[in-house]
Image (cartoon, rainbow, N blue to C red; front, side):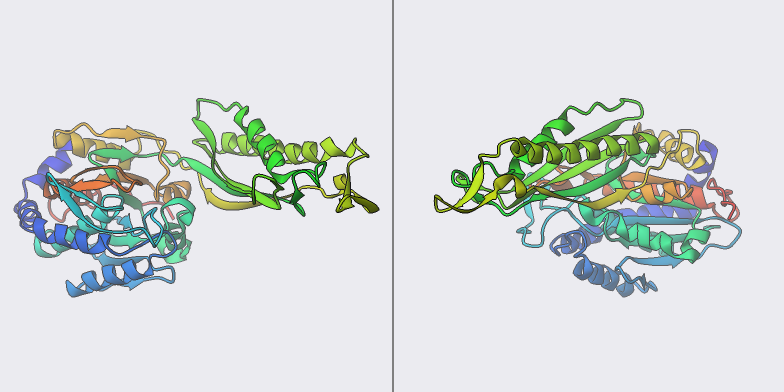
Length: 428
């Protein structure tokens, strides 16, 4: 594999591509700054998608946009090679009302979402231009662009939708998500279930209605039980209650409350086992809270202190509602899979030691779970602070990183007259 990359790197067309990417660096960074100022919270990416499409069409690319607003173009190869889909995600974790302003401090450009994953979108535009203008002839076909719905409760719906199309499922032989920072190869897909868990009843006064099962107490019991769950280290299996909400006042029995729950594992069986145990924790907690008050027959709801028409408070039970908000499939590959070996060989040829990770939760989860080789490759440039309002990006080394990804794509798809594809064509 190293020989393939070394051969392609010496081609005049590749050297021209690297030069074009370097000359294009300022333009690429300007496009990045345009894109990052367009809010794109998950499931609200339409405006950014439209602008991304506009930028692609301005370069003369024929753009496809599906019903969920994935946008991409197809670059045809000479034939006989595989098909590779390369994408960055259009969405960010920041709500639509998040202030977006670019501030430059000592060569670092601060703005929510400027790295994750907006810089990948600009990088992919630069790659499109380089493939168009360098004269290099890929053997396989390249699909490249931007997708929606990677972050949070977006639940990978963009890539999920792409591969729900029979044509794409049958055609694509490999997948690369440009995500993460710097030299990195994420080759595993950590599966996850995400839930909104709600507790409710009629609510009441903390003193006057004391004895009524309390939704917040039930929620507390559930969280305490979840905290005691034990999960295996291998495969890595985790859980967390991430958001808690509810209540009216300090002197009220809440009408309702809720929490958001995340359960993850690199193994499907372990994910399902943790899920089953945690669901039991929740249902047991509600049953215990309701049972807690049934033994006290003296606790009644009275009308302003009068004992007319008393109603047993224990009859006002806590009701439970569990909604699944996310379902990311597990996808397992090894360091010996061809697409993984190719990425590692690329970085070795380039003299870099990438961070490798089998515990990723990225757009690559979807294709890997479907038996399609997939990776998440780190974005070029420098940056840190993803998912925070102090996120920053620097274009330092951006063109060089783009050239590495260009080289990886060439190796996977093959170059006419110079190198056979490293990415196998799948049996379909």
